[in-house]
Length: 165
View 1 (tube, rainbow, N blue to C red):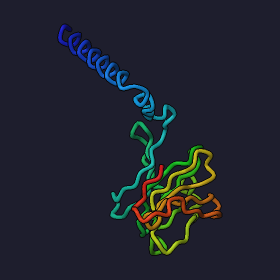
View 2 (tube, rainbow, N blue to C red; view 1 turned 30 degrees about the vertical axis):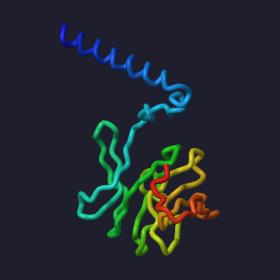
View 3 (tube, helix red, strand yellow; view 1 turned 180 degrees about the vertical axis):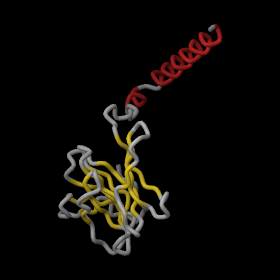
View 4 (spheres, rainbow, N blue to C red; view 1 turned 135 degrees about the horizontal axis):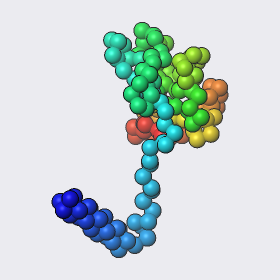
């Protein structure tokens, strides 16, 4: 018990010292964003796995039960991203020969190709309102409406831009 109390007191002391150090840094220290906390309503996790010899999209309950394979295609399906309402999943697949962004219902039904570009499209991220998707194509960040309209290059820069969130 004494050792645990000493560890807790040490932790509290370190936390106080860190807080004091940052408060002494002035206003710039107050602009650090708050940490992103886990979604308390998280019930399922979407992921890609090659457990059957080919990358497919799966979901699993947060407690580890209910593993379900959502895609079944000889192409590589990867990089799933939940819509904000958790009704749909965007993902990348090379089923048309190169990486494209697809959307499907959370149960794997109604798979729809969203992009049709000669360059590979990867790493889909939903807008907060669920109406647009950002993604990487040819090392640029693009956004597109979920009906496939209004494709817009946001970055248009010779540097490599990717992983929108």
